[in-house]
Amino acid sequence: MTPRLKKLFSPVTVKRLARFRRIRLSYYSLAILAALYGVSLFSELIANDVPLFMRARGRWFFPVLFYYPESAFTPGGHATRPDYKKLAQSPAFRADPTAFMVFPPIPFGPYESVDPASLPMRDTVTVTLNPAPRMASVNVDRAFKIERDEDAGYFFGRPDEDQTGRSFSEAFDLPAALSEAVALRFDNRGAPEAEFSVKSRDGKTRLMVNLSTYPPRQSPPETVRLNLSEPFPKTAGETKLTLAPSLAAESDPAHVLSRLSPEARQKLMDAVRTAFSGWADPVFVRIGGTRFSASFEKAEVRFPFPPTREHWMGLDDTGRDVFVRVLYGFRTSLSFGLILVFAGML
Image (cartoon, rainbow, N blue to C red):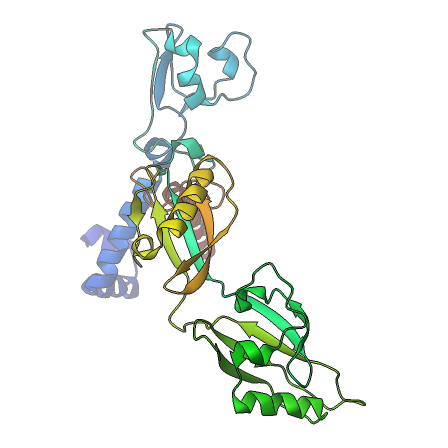
C-alpha cells in the first residue's frame, strides 16, 4: 500500500488490509469473485437473444444497445420488439443479400424459452418391462370344490372356461398345512394370513395360494376364498431397453431380446413399431418363465432438459438456459449485495 493511501486509512484499517492480503485463500477468492463480477457486467454482450448489431434494409442497427420496433424491419410490422431469430429466418430478410445479424457468443436470453425442435433428440422408443404375474381367485367348499372363480382358468390350463364345479384338489397337490388353514376358517376359528406353494398333479404348473387373515364371525363361512398367483422371483424387477427406428437395440442391459421367444419378440416389435408412429398399448410377454408388462414411450423433448453442447447447464422447467440465467442472476445478486454493504457503511 502506497504512503498516500496509508494516509487515507486509519492504522487499524491498514493492519486489517495487510492481514487480509496475507490470507492467500481469501485474497485470491476476492480476486476471482471480482473478475467474475466484472465479466457479468457485460452479460448482454455474452449471452442474449438480441443481436449485437445487424444490417437490414440498407441500414445498421444495434439492438443490444437500442430498442427497435418490428416495423423498423418489416413493413406493416407491430410497434413491439421483434423476435430477431424468427426475423432472421423470414423470407423478406433472407431475400436481402446484404442483410445479416451478429449474435453474442451465447445466443440465448435469460427469459427466452428454447424451441424444443432445436434440441438434439434421438428418435427412439424406450420399453419398460415390469413383472406382472397372473393373479386369480377361487371360492371353495370344505371338499375344495370350486363354487366361484375369477380368471382362474389359466391355472387350470383352460383360459376361457369357467372352473365352477371342478375340484381344486383334483388338479393340485394340497399341502397338509393348506388343508388345515382352510379347515380353521370353516370351523370359524381365527387364523392369520398364510401363503403356500402348490404344484399341479401333472407337475407342469406351480402357483402360490394366499389366505387372508380370518377373524371369527357370528356364523361359519359357506366358502373360503383362495387367492392364486404365479410365483414371483425376488430377482425380477423393472427392466428398460431402448430401440431405434430400425428396431435395433441401442440399449439392452438385461439382454431381454435374446431371452424372448420368437412369438413374444414379434409381439413386442409390433408394439414398438406402433409406438414410433403413435400410442402403443402395453403388452404382456414372458421372459424366463416370468410374465412382464411392457409399456412404450417415444423419446420426446421434456423440460427440464439435460446439458447439451449449446446449453452447458441444461434447461429449466420452462425451457430457459440455466447457464444464462445464472450469469444474469449472479450480476443481480452481487450488485444488490454490494449496494447493501456500501449503504450500510455510509
